[in-house]
Length: 445
Ligand SMILES: [Zn+2]
Image (tube, rainbow, N blue to C red; front, side, top):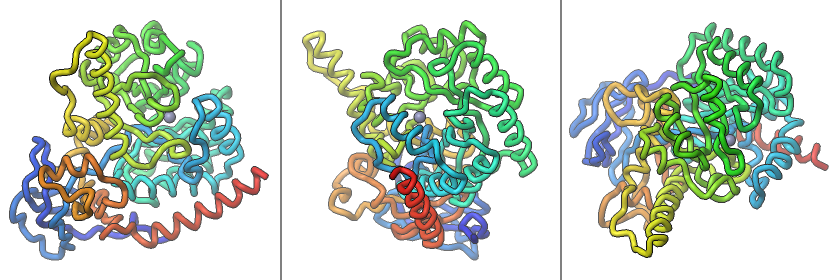
């Protein structure tokens, strides 16, 4: 189909909004975009000639949000498991619903997942893809990301149920790597490997998995540091497998020594607040220790089968979770906290620049600045819950959700305009998702 991703982008002039700048200020400014890049930010940015003008008066212009961990194939399975802990969740969703996925179900799930993310102002995702049994499944996952227009690092993880077959996984990864290079390498979609890691596999398996990633020169992402699964980083360290290319997801229960090892090795962390705080993975978010140790940290929605599609809500959970932790520590000393150490701007930074660093894309996304990719959103501040007296950034932080995201631009292409997603993309994605849901429900009978 003809998707937004195939249409040539017109230059854009986003006029008259309050723009969140890299220094944390949010003056009224215009943003000019050409060839997918931000060319100018400032008052009275020059007209470009043939541009589309987007009126941002009464709106906040933010860098597109970066989701640092999301299983995109679950898009079609949203709200399928709400009140379960991790292992029953895995049985119910990954095995029960996910195992029988066809190639068409993969395409529909990822495409709908991308639509959910874009609608909520998420312009870049770390897609942790672990339900891909065949090369056709892999191709469908990549094609869905591409068709949606979203930016992604596609962490390929084979099929969880067949991960006991490392030769199959390695062969798939090598073919994907070759096909990716043939397409010109990392453009809007970059590659990585989603590995089982030390919490899910033994030392020999990790040795082989990490050797494959290093052979292919790809970053890796592992779920690690969940409650009841201690010693993951210690294990990797004993095998010489730590490094700056390793991303740890959840990281709720790492020891002080493990945090020091991650910091010293240059690794990164993805916190997934809804899942971390409510699914029983630990009582502690990774954001606090990561920021304290200087470890790059981003936020992810993880699974829409269990949690929401939106990162504004995840940001608010971070502030609540971190302040609750500080509060509990003070109360434990018989004190009331006298000051707050984490601001809403700090958390917004985690959900933009932090995620960009986690994905290895910090030189391209995460900031509204000349030379960066034109991955931008506007938030309409006119609704009663956002029309505040004070800071527009604080208003959006405290109350915004997907319905308030007015404009979404990825690589200079407008994918949401006046609060509505591109109609061709939305109609196509919805039709695919509904057909897939019909098949999934029929198989579940
Ligand atoms: Zn996950």
